[in-house]
Amino acid sequence: MLKRLRENKAFQGTILAIPTLIFMVGLLIIPLILTAIISFGTRSPDGNVIYGFSLHNYARIFGISSECQNGKSICFDPLYMQILGRSLSLAFNTTVLVILMAYPLSYFIARSHPRRRNTFLFMVLVPLWTNFVIRVYAWMMLLRTQGVINGVIGWVAGLLGLHFVPLEMIYTPGAVLVGMIYEFLPFMILPIFTSLEKIETPLYEAAADLGANPFRTFLRVTLPLSMPGVVAGTILVFIPVMGTFIVSDLLGGKQVILVGNLIQRQFLDARDPTFGSAASLILMVMTLIVTYFYTRKFGFGEEIISA
Amino acid sequence: MNPYRRSPFIRISTVLVYIFLYAPILVLIIFAFNSSRTNVLFGGFITHFGPLSMNGSTVIQSPCGPFHWFCELAKNREVMGATKNTLTIAFISTISSTIIGTMAALALQRYNFKLKSLTQVSLYIPIVIPEIVMGIGILVLFSQVFTFLNGVFGITGDDRLGMGLQTVIVSHIAFSIPFVTLVVQARLQGFDKSIEEAAMDLGANELVTFWRVTFPTILPGILSGGLLAFTLSLDDFVITFFTTGPGATTLPIYVYGLLRRIITPQVNALSAVWVMIVFSIMLLMQKLENRAS
Image (cartoon, rainbow over all chains, first blue to last red; front, side, top):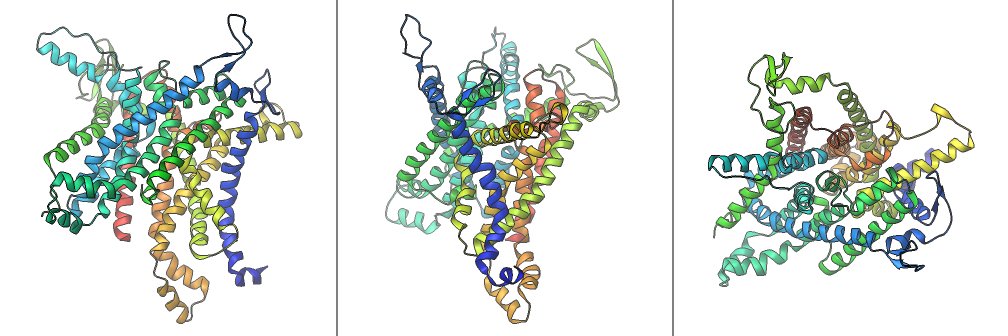
């Protein structure tokens, strides 16, 4: 055994990798398989899982319902499809807005003096590492009907002698959108910065020498070369927005229910793990499909690791 | 052409985005010094030591002055319990995942073996699936295994196996490993192998070479991987939410539970402390990186 360990390189490598493999297979791959198995099962009256093969959980998500009015045996209930659609469109809107906000900032950092670059990046990382829940709380304080934003507007209105009715901001889809943007903005800034930083100055000079104005240079040189960063950032933003439930829970209340909230409730309040597992798998498949087609179209850069 | 030229549009939008990033955090910290108890409105800063009048009526003794809410926080047993859990989980999972992840990085970078591609691919899974899917998966696994074991061994009552600190720690190790491995792997990629060869030529065997040459060189990578694992563990909400049990509440879970019921300046004080700690850890990481490059 010892001799084998000393002489066989492949054996040494396996030994070093085994603990990681145990964790990855045991707590990632096996759980995913188990989730899949359970999603075909049914729920016992006391909330446990009865193994079996039934597609009723998936039928339920896709809107095929047997509890119908007007005497039909099968009808369409769009509830869960609406939740999926809402999550998708929220993830899409968040991603687009985050790109629009992150790009100029990343560009600014990439074009700043190397000595100041680290400080600017550091300033992006501090909010990122401030706890997720705490950051949602900050927006609760700002957006509440008696919160900071309404307080400030009311104070200004008071100075001007105007009558002010506090705005209803929290518990709206807009509040959830703002919360998501705030949570995931840094995940877009870092990869875009990484790809912009790689573009070498002579390239800009060449474009200028050949008569391109700054706008044209941006369109034909900067933007195409920074696409890997945008793609990596999109993956890092889109996927977590699809699965997050705290933001919609605290800022959306009962108004904005996303796939994440649906799954969470199946495991805690409603206690139907089989339905929750099915929803969880559909969420995973949806994000994988979107990621697959997106990366196939635009390529998959190493920028994703830099973040 | 000046390579550092940035148009006014870029400058203005940069300033606006930085304001967007920092205004909420600033508000959070300012309200930690609020002299109003309900935290609905800002009643001004607490300016003096001694008796405090809250909302005009309640008078409370405040030996801490402006730091009143921080003292209340320190007196809060639930907060202290959650802090202890959070740190226990973070320390154990950081040490374990750093060792395990570094081993895997060495294996992937230096050796060829049968399970190499499986190992490398599995490390990317946490990046491409939503965290809730991983959390649900682990919850399903543990609950099925515990139900099975409790049934087989006939364990009943308080002795029943269930979720707790152990399940949270094991899950944290699992999601930290990929990050440690990827960071250390990146460090190993930039490693000049001729130094090792020189050590061997001078008569050092493989073990001595590793401990005297390789290890010190990649140590900054291991340390920043470890710090990353530590911050990830401190910060984690989703995985912890699904794997925690009675008596294993962490700070993020505690704050979340609190926010669904009431809001007090104590949460702001906690946030302020949190921001300060994260800020210090990140400064340390920055220093390590500077030394490495």
